Structures are given as structure tokens and as C-alpha cells.
Image (cartoon, rainbow, N blue to C red):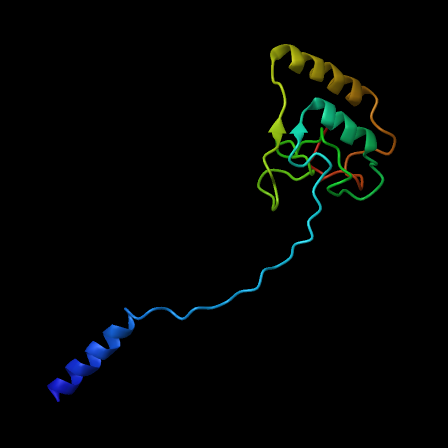
Length: 133
């Protein structure tokens, strides 16, 4: 009796060292459209180009978003996706000198003073109600 218990336990423990069964998986095709400046320089010039084509009355997408809009203190990538969201890609950033930031600040103040037609907080082309410009 003791001999059969020992043999059964040895056989059971041998399974732990056997190679695992192999499984095959199929790739999943994701139809994700990325923005015009994906994997390109995402500097102020690129952002102004995307802003010029942005239509606040049309639903927000990777090709229609406000690149100067922020959400919880974060700016979107070149596809309008914020950090922490699926498909976010860290963009290639442009110059960040003090003089360049002062120029960008002046432009931001001008945009805030005269927003695009149709831009209101929570519009279709905006991100979330908490977002701002």
C-alpha cells in the first residue's frame, strides 16, 4: 500500500516538470488611425497646423482635435490621445527654450482671446467637460 502511494505521488510530481502544452494565437488587427504628425516632430508649428484644421462642431477623433487642449494637466500626443489612455505615444518634442515658450505663451493668449467658431466647453470636438484650452 505504501509503495503504491509513493509511486502515485512520484507520477503526480513528474507532471510539474513536463513541458507545457503549446497554444497558438491569432493576431488581432486593430484599426487605429493615428494623427497627421504621428512619429514626426510635434512642435508648436505642427500643433498650429492641426489647430487650423480642427472643427469643434465635429466629433473629436485622431484627425480632429484641439492640440492645445489639456486634460488633468496633460497635453495630447500627435493623435489627440492623452497620457494613460490606450494607444498614447510619447511625441517627438520640439525646442523648449525660454524665448520659444514666451512666443508660444503669446500665441496661447491670442487663441484664448478669440477662440474658434463653435468652440465652447464640452463641444463635440472637445475631449471631456473637465478639459480646457
